[in-house]
Image (tube, rainbow, N blue to C red; front, side, top):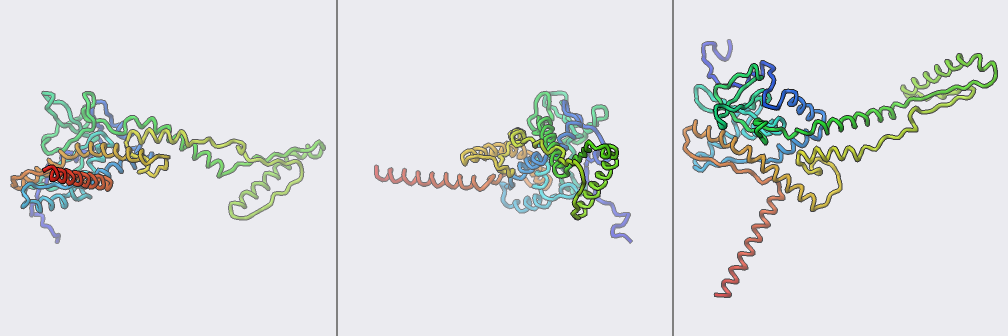
Amino acid sequence: MGLIKKSEKQPDIYALQSARSLNQQLNFYSGNMSSFENRLYEQLRIQVPVIDACIQKIVRLCGDFTIKCLDEQYQDELDEFINSVRVGISGQSLNCFVDSYLDSLLTYGNAVGEILINSETKQIAGLYNADSTIISARYGSTPLDRQFYIGTDGEAVKIRHPERLLYTALNPSAKCPNGISVLRGLPCISGILLRIYECIGQNFERLGNVRYAVTYKPSSDSGDKEFAKERAMQIAQEWSDGMNASRDGQIRDFIAVGDIGIKVIGAENQIVDTDIPVRQLLEQIIAKLSIPPFLLGLSWSTSERMSKQQADILTSELEFYRRLLTPVILRIADTFMTLSGINSKVKVEWSNINLQDEYELSKARLNNAQARQIELEIEKQNA
Protein backbone atom coordinates (compact mmCIF):
# COMPACT_ATOMS: atom_id res chain seq x y z
CA MET A 1 0.00 0.00 0.00
CA GLY A 2 1.45 3.35 -1.03
CA LEU A 3 1.87 6.30 1.22
CA ILE A 4 -0.29 8.42 -1.09
CA LYS A 5 -3.70 7.14 -2.14
CA LYS A 6 -4.62 7.36 -5.78
CA SER A 7 -7.88 9.10 -4.96
CA GLU A 8 -6.13 11.96 -3.23
CA LYS A 9 -5.80 14.98 -5.47
CA GLN A 10 -2.37 16.56 -5.49
CA PRO A 11 -2.08 20.35 -5.75
CA ASP A 12 -1.14 21.63 -9.17
CA ILE A 13 1.78 23.98 -9.60
CA TYR A 14 1.31 26.21 -12.61
CA ALA A 15 2.64 27.24 -14.92
CA LEU A 16 5.87 25.60 -15.85
CA GLN A 17 5.67 27.19 -19.26
CA SER A 18 9.36 27.03 -20.05
CA ALA A 19 9.71 23.35 -19.12
CA ARG A 20 9.10 22.54 -22.76
CA SER A 21 12.87 22.68 -23.17
CA LEU A 22 13.16 19.47 -21.17
CA ASN A 23 11.23 17.50 -23.77
CA GLN A 24 12.08 19.19 -27.04
CA GLN A 25 15.37 20.35 -28.46
CA LEU A 26 14.39 23.73 -29.86
CA ASN A 27 16.60 26.30 -31.49
CA PHE A 28 16.87 29.78 -30.04
CA TYR A 29 15.42 32.75 -31.88
CA SER A 30 16.65 36.13 -30.78
CA GLY A 31 17.24 38.56 -33.59
CA ASN A 32 20.92 38.33 -34.50
CA MET A 33 21.60 35.67 -31.88
CA SER A 34 21.59 32.05 -32.91
CA SER A 35 21.68 28.66 -31.28
CA PHE A 36 25.16 28.16 -32.74
CA GLU A 37 26.42 31.28 -30.96
CA ASN A 38 24.96 30.14 -27.65
CA ARG A 39 26.55 26.70 -27.99
CA LEU A 40 29.81 28.43 -28.83
CA TYR A 41 29.67 30.40 -25.59
CA GLU A 42 29.06 27.21 -23.64
CA GLN A 43 32.05 25.57 -25.28
CA LEU A 44 34.20 28.60 -24.49
CA ARG A 45 33.50 28.17 -20.79
CA ILE A 46 34.38 24.49 -21.03
CA GLN A 47 37.57 24.78 -23.09
CA VAL A 48 39.01 28.05 -21.72
CA PRO A 49 39.12 27.79 -17.91
CA VAL A 50 39.99 31.47 -17.42
CA ILE A 51 36.68 32.52 -18.99
CA ASP A 52 34.67 30.21 -16.74
CA ALA A 53 36.68 31.42 -13.73
CA CYS A 54 35.94 35.07 -14.58
CA ILE A 55 32.19 34.48 -14.78
CA GLN A 56 32.17 32.52 -11.53
CA LYS A 57 34.18 35.28 -9.85
CA ILE A 58 31.67 37.91 -10.99
CA VAL A 59 28.74 35.86 -9.66
CA ARG A 60 30.40 35.34 -6.29
CA LEU A 61 31.77 38.86 -5.94
CA CYS A 62 28.36 40.41 -6.50
CA GLY A 63 27.87 39.52 -2.87
CA ASP A 64 24.93 38.87 -0.65
CA PHE A 65 21.77 40.90 -0.19
CA THR A 66 18.98 41.31 2.31
CA ILE A 67 15.37 42.32 1.74
CA LYS A 68 13.99 44.71 4.31
CA CYS A 69 10.28 44.99 4.95
CA LEU A 70 9.21 48.51 5.92
CA ASP A 71 6.71 46.99 8.34
CA GLU A 72 9.01 45.16 10.74
CA GLN A 73 6.33 42.79 12.04
CA TYR A 74 6.44 40.89 8.72
CA GLN A 75 10.24 40.70 8.51
CA ASP A 76 10.48 37.18 9.96
CA GLU A 77 7.92 35.86 7.49
CA LEU A 78 9.79 37.46 4.61
CA ASP A 79 13.14 36.04 5.81
CA GLU A 80 11.62 32.56 6.02
CA PHE A 81 10.48 32.80 2.43
CA ILE A 82 13.89 34.04 1.23
CA ASN A 83 15.78 31.22 2.93
CA SER A 84 13.40 28.34 2.18
CA VAL A 85 11.92 29.01 -1.28
CA ARG A 86 12.57 26.11 -3.65
CA VAL A 87 14.58 26.74 -6.82
CA GLY A 88 14.09 24.12 -9.49
CA ILE A 89 14.79 20.54 -8.40
CA SER A 90 18.12 21.07 -6.66
CA GLY A 91 18.25 24.58 -5.20
CA GLN A 92 16.85 26.45 -2.24
CA SER A 93 16.82 30.12 -1.22
CA LEU A 94 16.45 33.28 -3.23
CA ASN A 95 20.23 33.74 -3.30
CA CYS A 96 20.59 30.44 -5.15
CA PHE A 97 18.11 31.60 -7.78
CA VAL A 98 19.85 34.97 -8.24
CA ASP A 99 23.28 33.33 -8.67
CA SER A 100 22.02 31.06 -11.44
CA TYR A 101 20.08 33.95 -12.97
CA LEU A 102 23.21 36.12 -13.15
CA ASP A 103 25.28 33.25 -14.57
CA SER A 104 22.81 32.88 -17.45
CA LEU A 105 22.72 36.66 -17.95
CA LEU A 106 26.49 36.85 -18.38
CA THR A 107 26.80 33.78 -20.60
CA TYR A 108 23.89 34.27 -22.99
CA GLY A 109 23.18 37.98 -22.68
CA ASN A 110 19.76 37.40 -21.10
CA ALA A 111 18.19 35.47 -18.27
CA VAL A 112 14.69 34.11 -17.80
CA GLY A 113 13.09 32.97 -14.56
CA GLU A 114 9.59 31.98 -13.58
CA ILE A 115 7.51 32.32 -10.45
CA LEU A 116 5.62 29.08 -9.83
CA ILE A 117 2.25 29.36 -8.04
CA ASN A 118 0.53 26.63 -6.05
CA SER A 119 -3.06 26.29 -7.36
CA GLU A 120 -4.51 25.42 -3.94
CA THR A 121 -2.71 27.74 -1.54
CA LYS A 122 -2.27 30.55 -4.07
CA GLN A 123 1.23 31.03 -2.71
CA ILE A 124 4.63 30.93 -4.38
CA ALA A 125 5.56 27.27 -4.71
CA GLY A 126 9.06 27.95 -5.99
CA LEU A 127 11.26 29.66 -8.54
CA TYR A 128 12.54 28.25 -11.78
CA ASN A 129 15.59 29.23 -13.85
CA ALA A 130 14.41 28.71 -17.41
CA ASP A 131 16.58 27.91 -20.41
CA SER A 132 17.06 31.39 -21.85
CA THR A 133 18.39 30.00 -25.15
CA ILE A 134 14.90 28.95 -26.29
CA ILE A 135 12.95 31.99 -25.04
CA SER A 136 12.92 35.34 -26.82
CA ALA A 137 11.27 38.69 -26.28
CA ARG A 138 9.75 40.45 -29.29
CA TYR A 139 8.05 43.72 -29.99
CA GLY A 140 4.28 43.78 -29.84
CA SER A 141 1.86 46.30 -31.26
CA THR A 142 3.78 49.20 -29.71
CA PRO A 143 7.49 49.79 -29.00
CA LEU A 144 6.75 49.24 -25.31
CA ASP A 145 4.64 46.12 -25.78
CA ARG A 146 6.80 43.07 -25.01
CA GLN A 147 5.75 39.54 -25.86
CA PHE A 148 7.57 36.31 -25.00
CA TYR A 149 7.92 33.33 -27.33
CA ILE A 150 9.38 29.89 -26.82
CA GLY A 151 10.89 27.94 -29.70
CA THR A 152 12.26 28.73 -33.14
CA ASP A 153 10.97 31.31 -35.57
CA GLY A 154 8.86 28.77 -37.42
CA GLU A 155 7.74 26.85 -34.33
CA ALA A 156 7.67 29.71 -31.81
CA VAL A 157 4.74 29.64 -29.42
CA LYS A 158 3.56 32.71 -27.57
CA ILE A 159 3.71 32.33 -23.80
CA ARG A 160 0.27 32.77 -22.28
CA HIS A 161 1.22 34.14 -18.87
CA PRO A 162 4.15 36.54 -19.31
CA GLU A 163 3.33 38.18 -15.98
CA ARG A 164 4.89 35.18 -14.22
CA LEU A 165 8.19 35.48 -16.08
CA LEU A 166 11.28 37.28 -14.86
CA TYR A 167 13.34 38.61 -17.73
CA THR A 168 16.54 40.64 -17.94
CA ALA A 169 18.62 41.56 -20.99
CA LEU A 170 22.28 42.58 -20.81
CA ASN A 171 23.21 45.64 -22.87
CA PRO A 172 20.20 45.43 -25.22
CA SER A 173 20.16 47.44 -28.43
CA ALA A 174 17.76 48.12 -31.27
CA LYS A 175 19.27 45.28 -33.31
CA CYS A 176 19.68 42.92 -30.35
CA PRO A 177 16.74 43.58 -28.00
CA ASN A 178 17.39 40.29 -26.20
CA GLY A 179 20.80 41.43 -24.97
CA ILE A 180 24.43 40.72 -25.77
CA SER A 181 26.64 38.22 -23.97
CA VAL A 182 29.81 39.43 -22.25
CA LEU A 183 31.58 36.67 -24.20
CA ARG A 184 30.87 38.23 -27.57
CA GLY A 185 34.17 38.98 -29.28
CA LEU A 186 36.09 36.29 -27.39
CA PRO A 187 35.71 33.26 -29.74
CA CYS A 188 38.38 34.54 -32.14
CA ILE A 189 40.85 35.35 -29.36
CA SER A 190 40.11 32.07 -27.59
CA GLY A 191 40.59 30.10 -30.81
CA ILE A 192 44.12 31.47 -31.20
CA LEU A 193 44.85 30.74 -27.53
CA LEU A 194 43.67 27.15 -27.87
CA ARG A 195 45.83 26.62 -30.96
CA ILE A 196 48.88 27.85 -29.04
CA TYR A 197 48.14 25.48 -26.16
CA GLU A 198 47.66 22.63 -28.61
CA CYS A 199 51.07 23.32 -30.16
CA ILE A 200 52.64 23.48 -26.70
CA GLY A 201 51.18 20.08 -25.91
CA GLN A 202 52.48 18.61 -29.16
CA ASN A 203 55.97 20.01 -28.55
CA PHE A 204 56.16 18.59 -25.05
CA GLU A 205 54.86 15.27 -26.31
CA ARG A 206 57.70 15.27 -28.83
CA LEU A 207 60.25 16.09 -26.14
CA GLY A 208 58.83 13.67 -23.63
CA ASN A 209 58.51 10.80 -26.10
CA VAL A 210 61.85 11.12 -27.87
CA ARG A 211 62.31 9.71 -31.37
CA TYR A 212 65.75 8.48 -32.48
CA ALA A 213 67.45 8.27 -35.85
CA VAL A 214 69.91 5.33 -35.98
CA THR A 215 72.20 5.47 -39.02
CA TYR A 216 74.55 2.68 -40.15
CA LYS A 217 77.26 3.53 -42.69
CA PRO A 218 79.02 0.46 -44.17
CA SER A 219 82.71 0.75 -44.84
CA SER A 220 84.32 0.52 -48.28
CA ASP A 221 84.94 -3.18 -47.74
CA SER A 222 82.96 -5.29 -50.16
CA GLY A 223 81.80 -7.61 -47.35
CA ASP A 224 80.23 -4.76 -45.42
CA LYS A 225 78.45 -3.50 -48.49
CA GLU A 226 77.19 -6.97 -49.38
CA PHE A 227 75.69 -7.64 -45.94
CA ALA A 228 74.69 -4.00 -45.18
CA LYS A 229 70.97 -4.81 -45.25
CA GLU A 230 71.26 -7.77 -42.88
CA ARG A 231 73.39 -5.77 -40.43
CA ALA A 232 70.95 -2.88 -40.57
CA MET A 233 68.10 -5.26 -39.72
CA GLN A 234 70.08 -6.69 -36.79
CA ILE A 235 70.87 -3.21 -35.48
CA ALA A 236 67.19 -2.25 -35.75
CA GLN A 237 66.12 -5.38 -33.87
CA GLU A 238 68.65 -4.86 -31.07
CA TRP A 239 67.69 -1.18 -30.76
CA SER A 240 64.00 -2.06 -30.60
CA ASP A 241 64.62 -4.67 -27.90
CA GLY A 242 66.63 -2.19 -25.87
CA MET A 243 63.91 0.47 -26.06
CA ASN A 244 61.19 -2.02 -25.11
CA ALA A 245 63.24 -3.17 -22.13
CA SER A 246 63.64 0.42 -20.93
CA ARG A 247 59.85 0.79 -20.77
CA ASP A 248 59.80 -2.05 -18.24
CA GLY A 249 62.54 -0.43 -16.15
CA GLN A 250 65.40 -2.60 -17.46
CA ILE A 251 68.68 -1.08 -18.58
CA ARG A 252 70.27 -2.69 -21.64
CA ASP A 253 73.39 -1.50 -23.43
CA PHE A 254 73.47 -1.25 -27.19
CA ILE A 255 76.68 -2.71 -28.70
CA ALA A 256 77.41 -2.71 -32.40
CA VAL A 257 80.38 -2.83 -34.75
CA GLY A 258 80.91 -0.33 -37.50
CA ASP A 259 80.14 3.32 -38.17
CA ILE A 260 76.82 3.85 -36.38
CA GLY A 261 75.35 7.26 -35.57
CA ILE A 262 72.46 7.90 -33.15
CA LYS A 263 70.67 11.25 -33.05
CA VAL A 264 67.51 12.55 -31.43
CA ILE A 265 65.01 13.66 -34.05
CA GLY A 266 64.28 17.35 -33.67
CA ALA A 267 66.79 17.92 -30.86
CA GLU A 268 68.27 20.91 -32.69
CA ASN A 269 64.88 22.68 -32.78
CA GLN A 270 63.94 24.92 -29.87
CA ILE A 271 60.46 25.33 -28.45
CA VAL A 272 58.97 28.67 -29.40
CA ASP A 273 58.56 31.07 -26.47
CA THR A 274 54.81 31.51 -26.00
CA ASP A 275 54.80 33.65 -22.85
CA ILE A 276 54.26 36.95 -24.68
CA PRO A 277 51.48 35.89 -27.11
CA VAL A 278 49.64 33.93 -24.41
CA ARG A 279 49.77 36.90 -22.05
CA GLN A 280 48.53 39.26 -24.76
CA LEU A 281 45.57 36.99 -25.47
CA LEU A 282 44.78 36.61 -21.77
CA GLU A 283 44.92 40.38 -21.39
CA GLN A 284 42.26 40.74 -24.08
CA ILE A 285 40.02 38.18 -22.37
CA ILE A 286 40.43 39.68 -18.91
CA ALA A 287 39.90 43.22 -20.23
CA LYS A 288 36.59 42.11 -21.76
CA LEU A 289 35.42 40.50 -18.52
CA SER A 290 36.81 43.27 -16.24
CA ILE A 291 38.44 40.94 -13.72
CA PRO A 292 41.78 42.01 -12.16
CA PRO A 293 44.53 39.49 -12.99
CA PHE A 294 45.53 38.96 -9.36
CA LEU A 295 42.06 37.58 -8.59
CA LEU A 296 42.73 34.80 -11.10
CA GLY A 297 46.13 33.89 -9.70
CA LEU A 298 48.04 35.54 -12.56
CA SER A 299 51.26 36.98 -11.16
CA TRP A 300 51.69 39.83 -13.60
CA SER A 301 53.84 42.73 -12.47
CA THR A 302 51.63 45.43 -11.02
CA SER A 303 51.86 48.20 -8.47
CA GLU A 304 49.73 48.76 -5.41
CA ARG A 305 48.18 51.84 -6.99
CA MET A 306 47.30 49.90 -10.15
CA SER A 307 45.73 47.08 -8.11
CA LYS A 308 43.54 49.58 -6.28
CA GLN A 309 42.40 51.11 -9.56
CA GLN A 310 41.59 47.66 -10.94
CA ALA A 311 39.59 46.89 -7.80
CA ASP A 312 37.66 50.15 -8.21
CA ILE A 313 36.85 49.28 -11.83
CA LEU A 314 35.64 45.85 -10.74
CA THR A 315 33.46 47.47 -8.07
CA SER A 316 31.75 49.64 -10.68
CA GLU A 317 31.12 46.56 -12.84
CA LEU A 318 29.58 44.68 -9.93
CA GLU A 319 27.40 47.67 -9.08
CA PHE A 320 26.12 47.61 -12.67
CA TYR A 321 25.12 43.95 -12.38
CA ARG A 322 23.46 44.65 -9.04
CA ARG A 323 21.30 47.33 -10.68
CA LEU A 324 20.11 44.71 -13.17
CA LEU A 325 19.29 42.16 -10.45
CA THR A 326 17.56 44.50 -8.00
CA PRO A 327 14.27 44.85 -10.00
CA VAL A 328 14.06 41.04 -10.31
CA ILE A 329 14.53 40.56 -6.56
CA LEU A 330 11.98 43.27 -5.76
CA ARG A 331 9.40 41.72 -8.07
CA ILE A 332 9.76 38.32 -6.39
CA ALA A 333 9.47 39.87 -2.93
CA ASP A 334 6.49 42.04 -3.92
CA THR A 335 4.73 39.00 -5.38
CA PHE A 336 5.23 37.10 -2.15
CA MET A 337 3.94 40.02 -0.07
CA THR A 338 0.87 40.47 -2.29
CA LEU A 339 -0.06 36.77 -2.29
CA SER A 340 0.41 36.69 1.49
CA GLY A 341 -1.99 39.60 1.92
CA ILE A 342 0.68 41.90 3.35
CA ASN A 343 0.38 45.55 2.43
CA SER A 344 3.93 46.72 2.91
CA LYS A 345 6.80 47.84 0.73
CA VAL A 346 10.19 46.17 0.60
CA LYS A 347 13.69 47.28 -0.35
CA VAL A 348 16.89 45.48 -1.29
CA GLU A 349 20.09 46.17 0.61
CA TRP A 350 23.32 44.82 -0.86
CA SER A 351 26.31 44.03 1.30
CA ASN A 352 29.59 45.83 0.70
CA ILE A 353 31.60 44.14 -2.00
CA ASN A 354 34.75 43.58 0.06
CA LEU A 355 36.41 44.41 3.37
CA GLN A 356 38.35 47.20 1.74
CA ASP A 357 35.06 49.04 1.21
CA GLU A 358 34.25 48.58 4.88
CA TYR A 359 37.62 50.06 5.79
CA GLU A 360 37.21 53.02 3.46
CA LEU A 361 33.70 53.72 4.77
CA SER A 362 34.80 53.56 8.38
CA LYS A 363 37.78 55.79 7.61
CA ALA A 364 35.51 58.33 5.91
CA ARG A 365 33.16 58.35 8.91
CA LEU A 366 36.11 58.91 11.23
CA ASN A 367 37.37 61.82 9.13
CA ASN A 368 33.90 63.38 9.02
CA ALA A 369 33.53 63.02 12.78
CA GLN A 370 36.93 64.61 13.42
CA ALA A 371 36.14 67.45 11.04
CA ARG A 372 32.79 68.02 12.76
CA GLN A 373 34.50 68.08 16.16
CA ILE A 374 36.99 70.70 14.97
CA GLU A 375 34.15 72.83 13.57
CA LEU A 376 32.30 72.73 16.90
CA GLU A 377 35.44 73.76 18.78
CA ILE A 378 35.95 76.69 16.41
CA GLU A 379 32.33 77.76 16.87
CA LYS A 380 32.76 77.71 20.67
CA GLN A 381 35.89 79.85 20.46
CA ASN A 382 34.19 82.40 18.23
CA ALA A 383 31.06 82.55 20.38
